[in-house]
Length: 320
Image (cartoon, rainbow, N blue to C red):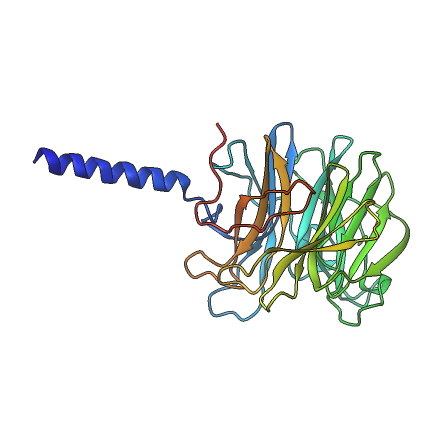
């Protein structure tokens, strides 16, 4: 009897430990996608899309954008959905990938959705920007119109090429926005973060599809993106000595993900470690249109190149 009790206690302990480590996907009560992390005042905030398609659906249904936060990489506080396409009077359709950045104490959430047919646009994908004095909102449309419309870029002929904005603010305070499906586009932003500054440039990194993420580490600039891969997508990247390029192709850092055609990078350093956020379709009833955000460690080689991401169900360890 004593041995039976000891074995039972040991099994319970093992289950508790497993539960504590088993983090991926990190959000389990709703379907989330397109993760974009931000660190502010010692807190890691995570901005995501929200898949609401039912298992029988054969296309995306993305209702709104959500915010979560953590200080230990284990427990996540849910702030709900402070932003949706309905926030923008000019918008219609789904909540595609987005990223929130901070400048001068204000938070600018760059989003991609679709534009209503009106006197400014004939429709198609568009990029807007919302603003708040808090990383968790409330957010409002910063300019009352789209920042980028489909008519402003003509290199790709399909209507959904202006999606997936990533915004990077360099050490000198200058801001750059990259985005695009089919080709990668970039433009400088003015100091107010709500106007473009100069010409829109387009190029196509090797195997590029969509979902760029721009950041800087130890003087080297990284452009990470969802690539053609083996269809499903993979994650590949380029590096440069300037936020405007020229970009040198560097390689693959993430292979295909579980049960999802797409994947999407979000990269951040937090409390001395580097983290790689992405999505897959691994939750029960999940799939390409019912995705889930995950996080794993990211490691660099001495030359600044990125080691292959090891996708795990355990995720990352708790930060004490």
